[in-house]
Image (cartoon, rainbow, N blue to C red; front, side, top):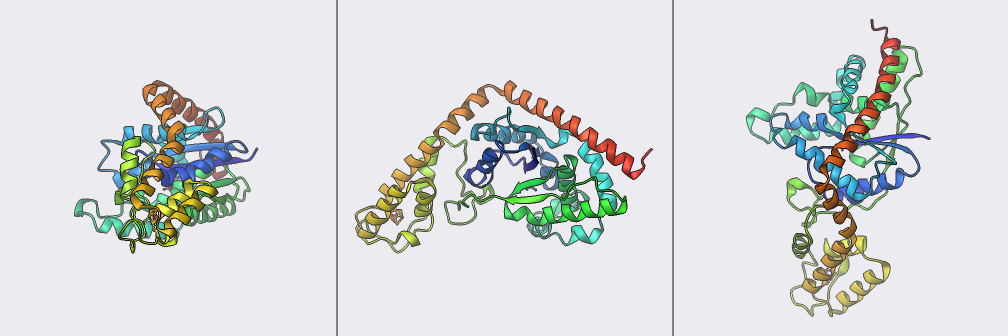
Length: 332
Ligand code: TRP
Ligand code: SF4
């Protein structure tokens, strides 16, 4: 069975963008592949090294959201990056063979640097660790010598660097030990935030998997609609309804979407009522996930055990790879 590895930074509670864009895809893949999913807490440190108060809780929250969403620890291996210290050693070896300009031209890193520069002085420098972001990611992938990496488009450039590093390593040490990994693009729909921008915790426009039904319903009432519509019986334009109708298309079935479209266009559907119904639909869709989330919140020992076991299993795999790598390089 082909091996898949993918990770998410420990950013705390996840939102519907994560669920629809990434996790749902993982849930499908776990039936066909040998899957390893990990919380990238070192990657979180690359920008939040001076704000670690919530780090532990953030890791737990990410894993609970995964479990709630249907990642099954019987099928997939769940681990925490920093609990597999072999990754750090592999990162050292990879950092030796990676030319500096490869990391300097990484577009994602350039974006991060831009964001950092807008912050207060103490944290506005790119650290040595942040420069190594794509190299550390390569270590994550190569540590399990995996073939396929399911990620969003924003991570493709990183996988490209990983492929370059694999080729360079194999060349320098005259080996074919490492596989060239391939990205698998998530085919899921991209959900925008309530204000029409990219859904993100930092834009404060997200709906969390862990939000209560009340909070979800309230948030959805703030979703942008057809801005040209002022009164309830104005004729509406669903295709210009920037957020609410898009959500209908994601969460509703064909018949529901059609009804909304017809009633909106006829002017027989008010936006407030429309969003009330939409809120109920979203809550219905998330009901089982939230139920499972509550279960895991009340059984934290189970969650910690899943992390411990998964990390131990990953470590055993990582040790085998590392032994080979040390041997290939010619370490003592
Ligand atoms: N950089 C990824 C993100 O921000 C997380 C990540 C770290 C990752 N290591 C990885 C993803 C290895 C895939 C494979 O989402
Ligand atoms: Fe959007 Fe619904 Fe209002 Fe039409 S009725 S503009 S679909 S919120």
